[in-house]
Length: 282
Image (cartoon, rainbow, N blue to C red; front, side):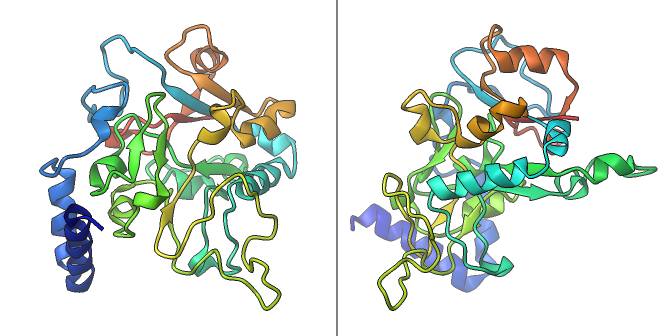
């Protein structure tokens, strides 16, 4: 372990013990006083306080996801299939209780995902629909700025992904994420039973790494599949119902660009200015 990593662990440990010190350390990181990696992405546009897209012409690739909520409602069980497929290929552990739950893709109620939208005289039908929740892969991701080890970083295609080996478990990224899209392994996903089988991963995908206790994890837009020119697993599952659209939002000829131009969509907490890459067609 080199001195730099040892110092970071020391800072994170002291913050966790002191409790009150953690917010101060996080604020320090969020203000950019510690080098962050958000500039590694394709866009260095400043955030807009109202959540609007930058005025300048976008360059490079920016991957985005559009979720057609009504299509999922019309196809009962489709959302659950997407969640199951995502968690299986990524070895997401199932600890069997909500307290330790690890989530990459999950189902939420409208009021939980969009608390900033008015619920006055709410549309009862809309509030009964299943909404898939996932990391928003923000164009200006606060989690990237908060990570002291650059375990979380922004790829050239705009996806916010993680290097699990760099994660020191400080959970600054979880505090910084306004969408609750990250989970912490309080227990070891690698724990085995008396027969030597993994207790919390029923169908192991040997092509994807398992994590260890003390590591944060989240959706990675299926970076490993994108490297093989495959779509994210959830998009593949939803393709038959045309319930998801995925692609380069900076390409005006891509399917997702055409969908976003023609259909009404909403995003989670747009006023924060993080510029989410996930849209909901309602």
